[in-house]
Amino acid sequence: MDNKPTIHLHCSRKNGRLETTTLTHHTLPLARELAKQVLQAGDGLYTKVDICTEYGYIETIDNHTVIVAPEETPEVLLVEDNAGDALLMGQALAECRIPVHLHLARDGEQALQILGESDFKLDLIILDLNIPKVSGHSVLSLYRPKKTPVVVFTASENEADIERAFSLGADEFVHKPMDLDVYKTAVCSMIQKWAPREESGAPV
Image 1 (cartoon, helix red, strand yellow):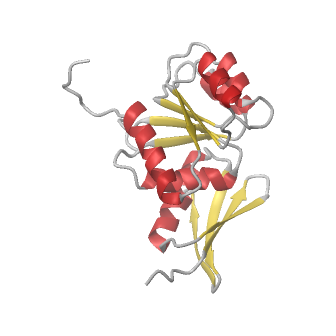
Image 2: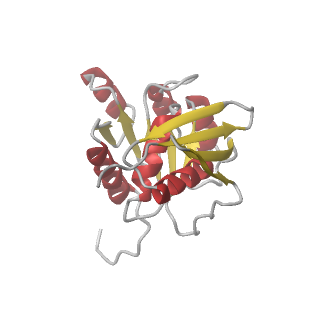
């Protein structure tokens, strides 16, 4: 019953470069949702995503297929240079109880540009430490003012990295789990803890 075909997402970038991510044990509807998440999160970086299996091409998801998230949806910035990790994040978010509008920065420089836009209101920043151009630690130190919660989500388990991230203003440090189900749970927990925009009558 678990014999789902391996699905490949071929993500075409504006500069013509192709990035391929392999999904195992995934259904086609979930692959479609992931493709839409990638296009939406990339903010124009990707032009289309071709969905294929080992049996051949299935369909193309492009920017006309993507539905814009409603206004009240939490705005989340993911700072992540690895396309596979960005896809995995999209998959986890697609299964969370709270839908989010995901923005993607592929390096620290791009993250600081987005964070410098005064009219752009973010509800959560999910930050990898090992990113090009400007490191995750440098993004933390240069990000002013620190209004938006920052969760460091990284493969590092180095105690010095953890201490430095907190000293620079990170609100939480989460190690990237290897297990897919644990990964999804970790991502959904972050969203539920830091990014809900639900009406809350509860006293603060």
